[in-house]
Image 1 (cartoon, rainbow, N blue to C red):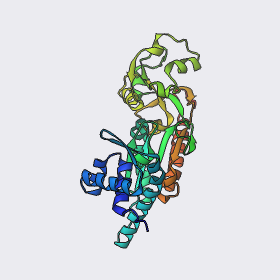
Image 2 (image 1 turned 90 degrees about the vertical axis):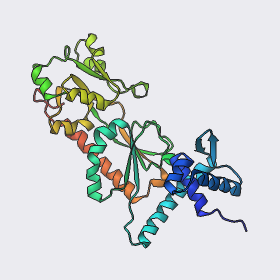
Image 3 (image 1 turned 135 degrees about the vertical axis):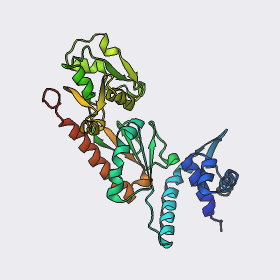
Image 4 (image 1 turned 180 degrees about the vertical axis):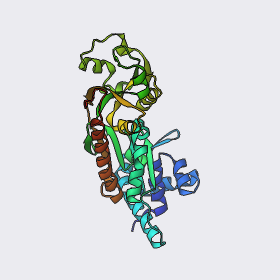
Length: 312
């Protein structure tokens, strides 16, 4: 009868694949990196094929490794919960959330406290990642992204389509009233080629039927939406900002809508949940909360008055 792999070896493989290195897995498992590597090599010898592609210090799961990794993750999560239950402790919900850096810093980090208090869940990892992400290697349970095109092989659903507003600090508006955007200092966001569908000031001027001069291409340039927003809240000009991020700034009056025109984003915000996490209660709770919170904040921003008493 063939000997089954040991739980230690399986745990070493799962942790290495999820964290992306033997060293990180060793830190998690409280053993040496050499011990983790030895366990994984022994497992590979036992099953007769490699579980990792190795190059220098990098490791990536082979097709065989990727095939079993989701089930191992679920199994060890369940064992972890059972162990805590047997020991008399309430099992902590482990939840790893991934989103673009602008969403994490500009919205999610401010709003997630509501989710934590509502569901009494505090063991959360909040990651800032660029698309595409490796769900299994990084242990990601749910990914919020812009557009559906990144994760065609995973279960991806739409959250909402956001709106873009021209916004500035109230002090800037008062100092420059009546505000003439054709001649006002503008703050631009350089999104790079991966985010070419984000509206630019040139798009905004064309939609507003305002003659486009050098102003549409001149002014301060920031490489993230949050940097552009911070420049605007400092009174240095007018920026284009997503409604999702605008709600809290409208409420605390650090920003105000500078013009009634608004532009819809070309793609919706989406969320992707890998199969291994699809039935976890904590993931389903966060999914429902994210839908509600995101849609509510986008809609609230649409209902704030503009300088002319109109709604965008």
